[in-house]
Length: 339
Length: 254
Image (cartoon, rainbow over the protein chains, first blue to last red):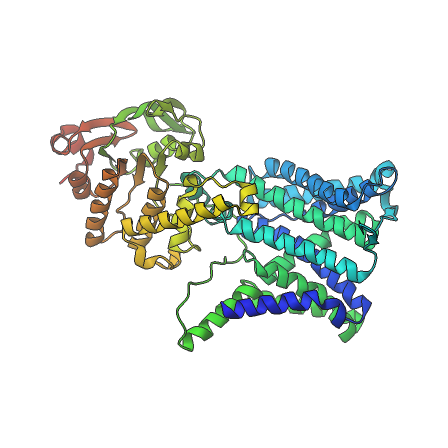
């Protein structure tokens, strides 16, 4: 408990003072991307980690958020970022609701397929609907957010914006998970027939999780668009989704800290490798780190560390604590059929 | 009163239930018995919405259950357990029961996000209720252990605790004693009686005839998807057709 509070305080302190100790603006850029990916990983974790449903089209919600925000803040509408951001969340949430209604009747592998197809379709629309999206050329000149008299154009100010958004996303996840709603989601992951037998409405709660998850990814997309100031169909790349999945699984699915650690590690790692390793070995090294992670820490980094510290505390004669409530490896099946 | 009339279930061409009718009076412990394949679990699945019957009507207290989903049926006070051990494996025993309390909470999405005073009060109330259920079934000492780490007999008690937490009016127990030792069975019988004292009507599917005859007030016998007998345990023991159905079978009525 004390260790956890110390780690949290240390992390928060480091994050708040980052612009002072990160001298290189490029490194600050990497941190901003890490914060945006933290939001995305938290968003995916809500579905994958807590309900056990894998969305392999999560980049679609990210991209919908990015395009919505960009289109609303560009001419002719030129809405404020502070309206465009919630609108982006709402647009992504609407898409999440549709996908949830459609696909969560089937669950498991079918949900995975529907989300992949959805992302594919949305990506094609962004490439081909020239009049709206400007096609592959993308939408340049997305304005930086303004806050009263200030424009959040510098990396330092934007860092605080994304940091606040990531913190908010974390709080939302934390509150949802530690509630009756979170218990319902976990119950559906653990044993759906049993969950239904005590009155938990599977469809309703899975759709709710999909909506919240999509809205959060939409927020990530909006923040990305106003940061890079440019949106193109690349936001729908499958590699974004894969990155999110890696972050969640390697960090520790079904835990709150897992996606944060995963997002930080797997945003910073490629940059470290870029400086440490010749270019032709970068992806190979990334792959090796990933394989080592999954092989030696199959439940994820955070649950493994928690378990290790508890073991250490127990051998040191500390009080026995409850075992970690995290999950085993990714489950792709439906719950056991009732007898 | 649970009113089942003309309930029929077919799987492809196979008739699992050939249109059965029976009633379970409020406040009783009633057993549903019969040889393997008689259709007991099928009847449970059809009553609780896990299986859509081919035809027939099921009503609890005049409220039709047909065509409803399991979660809606639970909301109407009808809660079941499963034949194979069914808990939330990775959760603590305490969280298993808290999950069972789902319908006793009301906090919605926005009050959870705002963490309102009312939501926090509800969480405290639910935690206390969960502890109460744990002491009721005698699992308080296992509170913080993972459900799947418990010995088999205690996992079955967790199942019962989850169902009790849902505060049912009618509880359907599917082979609750399967795999239990003699001592565990005695505890189970006492527990089921205690549950009934809480104004819960109990319908049990069970193979252990000694347990059934000792526990139930009314016994309903199924064979080949039909009700062949219904009555108090003494009548069932002497019923010629029941004896014929069980003849040569290891679990003949004692």
